[in-house]
Image 1 (tube, rainbow, N blue to C red):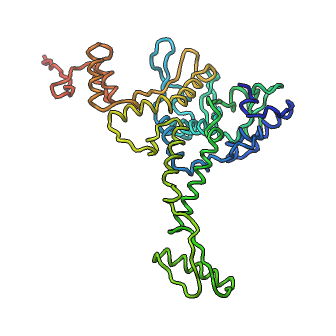
Image 2 (image 1 turned 180 degrees about the horizontal axis):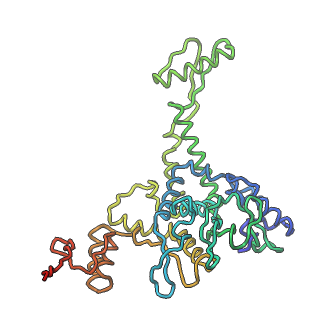
Image 3 (image 1 turned 90 degrees about the horizontal axis):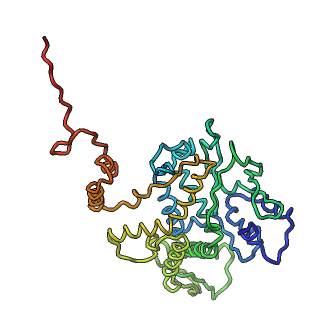
Length: 398
């Protein structure tokens, strides 16, 4: 798909190459809160609902979905392997801890966050290896600070800018770009998120008023403005503190609003939570959008479903980008170790381990490593499972 299609430029809108470059470059002037709407702003499509990531995160279902996707992937170990033999090798510093100031979980989690909301994520190279010139350290860059330039016909990005300043295409200070398979949650589900935001605001307004909205009608003489304000404050305060209020004079009260049951706010929030879960690619029950009786066995199956349809796209994007030749040597590959994420209950793990041992596929030390136990070594274990102390033979002196 060309850049024009990705930017959603209308078919009846003709742009010169210079205009395309200018419009792409001006993205650097958009603050972080506005970057999420850039897909719609370039095409000037009035049907695109403009919201920000910060606004979307005020919706509990969005925050929960983000935590599940970004948090889960951030905690999964990341290892390097020999592409030819499949053997695990020592991680390069970039894989072990990309940012010298942050743990790896922070960097990976925010990369997933950027891919989820914006459809792109960036690492800036802080240092390169003296041996091969590949990235040695890198830091996650806020997507709102990044813009790009395109070629003469607007079909390919030729260079990137950081804070409106050009960055090299490789080496020190260059960007490692992670492209999602779609434009991002805010551009793809803007209307759904906007509806959820409005519903949260309506719930807040409803919670701030203990009963439906009311109108106090004065059927007598008109009151001055200060007395009207005092009357309303007294009435509202009495309702909050005592649930009832008494007002003297020819004042009549009329209910003009609907309560939460009549507005079906609970049902609406439940529906939108399910829609947000579907949009994020996770099972609805993860955000409590559906009532279901979960046992340990089907929770394990749901984790597999979460991995296949929710986590896998982000995992593959990060794995394949970090395995490319400009980041990792050609005979190496980078992969997440998802076995720990999918590990079952202790009884299931023991059964699998015993079968692998009986088949000669793994050794005892490898089986102990699978259960996060220290290797036993070559010494035989005693009946109670402990390693006996080393025995020495005393040689008599002459």
